[in-house]
Image (cartoon, rainbow, N blue to C red; front, top):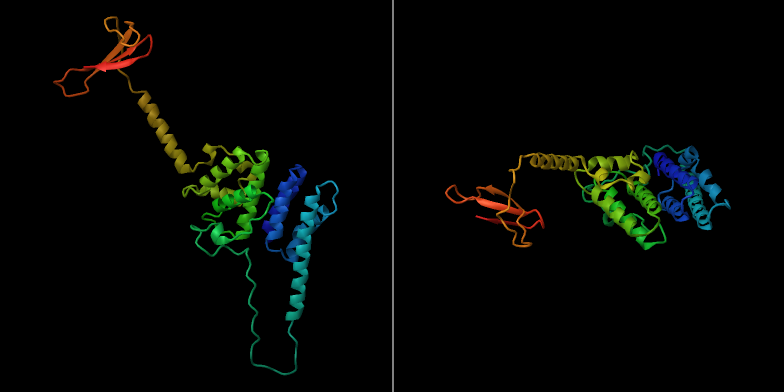
Length: 299
């Protein structure tokens, strides 16, 4: 995990703790950190992530599950740092006095999941990317994380790890905003997914990906706010067309006491006439009873 992404995760964790969000939300963030690739020692020092999470292991003011999750993260990071040090020591070349004209082979670089996505960003989804989705203890929440992952990864060149971290944050924000697993929570997750998958909605995807739209704000956006600019322009054009049609002068209605409503028997009837067929045919009379609202026509 690179420095920028780790800092974002730590900031999200600190904010959740400050707002005293449910333990499940905080544990979800910690589990995402645990399942992600371990950051380097330099990145840990720069972000002080180990210090922030390490304190949670012994913080009696937080829930036991938070302390346990924090311990797992710290233990994994420590093991990764130590393992890298041992490998570096073992890989150090032994100098000999015997000259050699053969260059030493360069060890292959270890692939990192933080590298940009190499596949087809139009077709990627969780079945292709295989992210570690088992983040929470709830199958419903994990399924919602999958749904959000599939929405965020569409046309997204970010790594699997980065997309998963964002999906976890959005799901946690929705879970908190709607007060747990309920109909509104599930409907909102589906709605967010559907809007992210609209091909023309590139601006929404960009802002969610960059953090310009925070997860907390994203889950509160209305259907109109989630629409693409193209969709908004279509709606505006349709609204203007309807307005123009409404302003077209309508034929003036006349009132007659000679016409009788066949429904209520009253003779309070308004009517208009229009040429609906060929010119040599009689005009059609459109009637409306002012008493009961019944409508009919005759020629």
